[in-house]
Image (cartoon, rainbow, N blue to C red; front, top):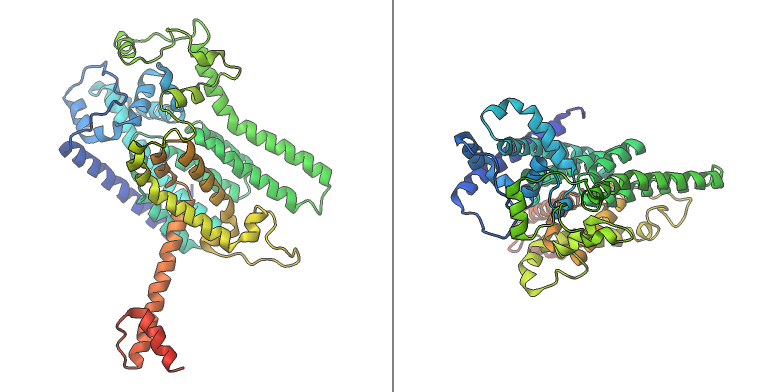
Length: 458
């Protein structure tokens, strides 16, 4: 666990306050605003509901909307429907462990109510620890504790805050990913790989994190190329890259294999309660006891790509429809932030970006002085990570999911960098206004007039 210095204590206090406020607001608005009746996944409740269950539903029911229903359903019943396999098992397993710890509550609460309490407790814990982990990572990468501190606070206030509180896997994924990045920055590559692998078991986009391991290994290879045996280092690099891909790909592969055993091998399916079978017939959900799905006969039978295409219409430019324009507008602020961050960084460090950060200066004899803050050379790989996810999300995914880029390290770092720039501009304007006052001239238009006035007396 991190040592709690004053800045970390403040981040911890602020993150806890934000989480408590979020839970209070969701309870209030869930009570006063009627739910939107969308054709979302809404399975029947099999267990009877008592007065205490209704109280829990009233206080925490707002955490169970949309995709959260899938996670709660998987934690309670397992992977019964084909489309449930779009949601990875890491978070449902965490809910099951927490619900088991709440076993004394089973005497007067249903299993679903205990799951809702587990969602509130676990995601509050995960998001608070993720904020502290981001602060820790920012200190290592930005070399500026002040910016790392405020970036962690921005993370707590990001638009993704709702996903960090609800029954989604974002909070756990952010905690594992930030912790893995921090371990990698400290040079603990195998600890980092283990944490990245756990994150892949929580969300599929954890597979992209293999780039961090590969980039770190390539940097180590190029830095040692001139002093050690090149052939030996090359073989070591290839072995490390293979192990990195294997480590992060293993959770994904095992999950796909489990789906294959359930739907493509006879006799592997679990019994399904009759009300859930009836729901499958009414909604057209594929269950394991039905006909063999078409993806079972593929050369590479991946259920994940199949259900993303069939159930969620995910594919290249498939989301580009006129009726989706509001969702594009919803994703615009995050897209602009990442695009602006990319442009700023590339124009500031063109040679570093051209050489992929593997060589910092055209002249190897001259060491480039690292810039603190967002423009630090260490930010390069995080910039590429965010830019790749934004590009892929904009072209091949539901574009509003770009809001989930907010938990990436780059977005709060860039937001805090812009805040620091604005504060510097304001400070400069105040300084210019003060110099104007010394000349007994009232500046009618701020710093611009001050600059003109000072030029008159040069």
